[in-house]
Amino acid sequence: MSAFELNTSIANLRDLLASDLRAYDAVYLGDIYCRLYEANFLEHPEDLREGLRILRDQGKRAYVTTYAAPRNDFLPKVRKMLEVAATAGAQAVEVHNLGILKIAHDEVPGLPVHVGGFANVYTDAGVEVLRGFGAVRFTPNYELSLDEIRDIVTTSGAAMELLVHGKMPLGISDYCFLLEYEEKWGIKCPDLCQKDLFLKQGDWAMKSVGKGILSGKDVCMLEHLPLLLADGHRHFRIETVSETPEYRREVGAVYREALRRAAEAPFQQDEGWWDVVRAHARIGLCNGFYFGKSGMDYAGIRPDAVGSFLTITPSTG
Image 1 (tube, one colour):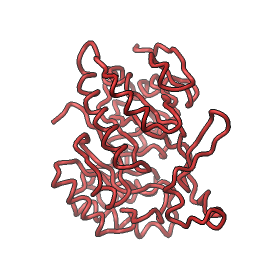
Image 2: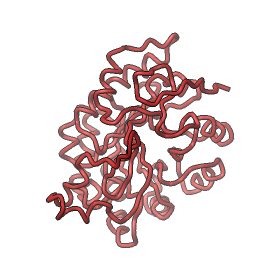
Image 3: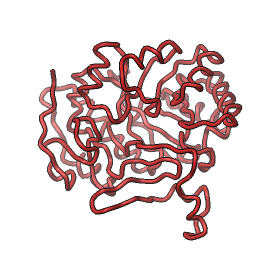
């Protein structure tokens, strides 16, 4: 077993069957944004059972996510999916909502709980509250810097899961931003939110996935992996739920090898890695908010990574 976990996310059985997952240790099944996302695992219990079986047969850790903005009428289906997760071999469930956290704690108490990015973990006090309901792993809010995350870990000892590559989730609504364009564009739900739809103004961009807004640029922590490992982080996500199987396979292979090398000194990067991640980043690369700067900026020694470039030496203290 590797000293770290590299995981990703897949929305439906079609994408799971099309994906080469050799780079990954674990997979989250389901789309957190919309019940109408094509063949969403979270709406199809038998597909979810089959997905969990496939991952188990491949020797992967299998996780089931849940909706980020559930309404009361979602809860019967959420309960059903938690039951499937608990009985069909899932090794954890991811929650973004306090109500679903309590349901999981009360109704499937043997199933470990991971707290997702929309649960707004900003403080060690928040971690302690969530732990009271059985949470064992936490994705910090995406606005937090590495220094702030380090402070939470130092105080709480929490196991954190960090986004290391892919589009950063920025916002969620239970109302779809795109439905009014069905007739205008001649594209019907659920195909609409699976297109590459970017909100752009100059070099600023965000991606719409219907009920969710993501960063236009891909977060890229490739050259900063030694820092993340030095801080004690061991759980890393490549966000691919709205990406192609090719993206999932090729970017995953880069990070699998990079994480292996990051444990060595000095960290020897491969120029081919950058060819891959640049090719898949339609708008460019950034570091999100990890270095306390604008989410659009890139910090590091790769001025060719993006148009906006900052030279930043992150704190290691």
